[in-house]
Amino acid sequence: MLFKQQALLRQKLFVLGSLAIGSVLYLVARVGTLDRLQPICPIEGRLTPQELEQIPLRALQFKRGLFHELRKGNATKEQIRLHNLVQQLPRAIIIGVRKGGTRALLEMLNLHPAVVKASQEIHFFDNDQNYARGMDWYRGKMPFSFPHQITIEKSPAYFITEEVPERIFKMNSSIKLLIIVREPTTRAISDYTQVLEGKERKNKTYHKFESLAMDANTCEVNTKYKAVRTSIYTKHLDRWLKYFPVEQFHIVDGDRLITDPLPELQLVEHFLNLPSRISQYNLYFNATRGFYCLRFNIVFNKCLAGSKGRIHPEVDPAVVTKLQKFFHPFNQKFSQITGRTFNWP
Image (cartoon, rainbow, N blue to C red):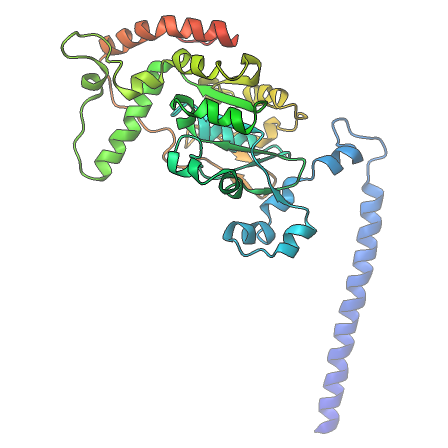
């Protein structure tokens, strides 16, 4: 009986040894094959060793390990030090506008290996309580990144809040500012739709858009309605231009970002002095959602939240026309100041 057990054991060891040797031989052969498959000529557009050193691949950022621990606050100081990670103040901020496509723009820019985004809206400069907590608190809300990467945050309320331009100027007078806009009437209706959905979730009633956007007494556009005021882009921009030159702003066409995002993203890359890294490969149209989704690599894709692209309620065409005529002179001035033209009525 003992002899049989010993023979069986020797047989198992032999099989395991053969498998191990086979695995080693396979790996050796595989390495040799991979070595032979290396391209002889350089491929156009490939990063140079210097560029690779300057802009590491985003793979680290999407690891389930360290960055997951960082988000949970569990990473050790030693891990952070070894990876040379820091929390940096943003060198660019998406300051608005609400319902212009700020989330889509932020997520799309995050495709770039040199860009790291703050996941949540910080509301530091537009919230007195947060602002009183100081710059260290603000920095602590930023994601960990490599020192050469650009941290970007977005808080759409910044654009329309009076105190914000001066506060951001005091932090960094040379910061780059991104504003994404949509056709003003469409943006106002989208703004209304988001509020309406929130009311409906709470089983509350809400006014019709027409009764909010129009003054019942004068039958003129109601400029006291916040959704209308936000869409008067030039009035808000005038306040920012008291602190920053127009060259520090880049205007993104939010309507075009929906239908053809790559050209808009390439313009932003240029504005931020980043090498062109976002390509059509990174953007694919999802017919079910009706939006472009993001492809970071062969295994990691991402689409925007289901709340994006809400169905707008039908609005009286006469009200739409009246709003478009009201916004028209403001739109013209906005284009003259920024140098961007739009396909708006």
